[in-house]
Image 1 (tube, rainbow, N blue to C red):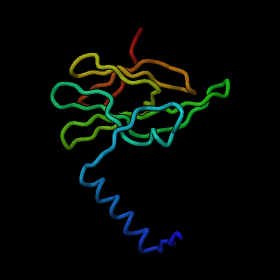
Image 2: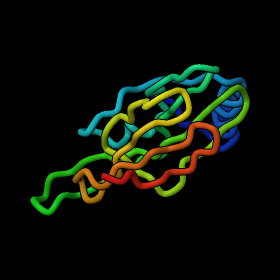
Image 3: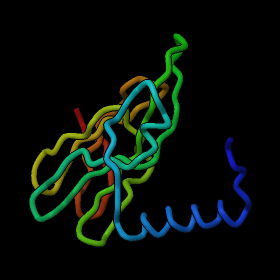
Length: 131
């Protein structure tokens, strides 16, 4: 027999989950094109010298003109306690380090790769790469 949970029990569970996140516990999950739910967890995708980490954070579902779907991810640069979101750059592919201060990420638009951007790992500022 299953027991119904009351509002106070749900609140307690939510508080415990929030406390666990505040303590820095994270579960890494791979980027998966077939499940937006799995992609909503932050996941480490690259590291650079000096303790720099690049993480996938936010997720959005996309649809290609042929009806296929994908999951695009936002990027965040982390160093110690600092978190720098990369503005307006959702990507469907893992970014690549160019050197110790720059990464390359390809913009994704309707499940198709778009322009490549060079992202400064100190500021998070993306600049379209000239080809």
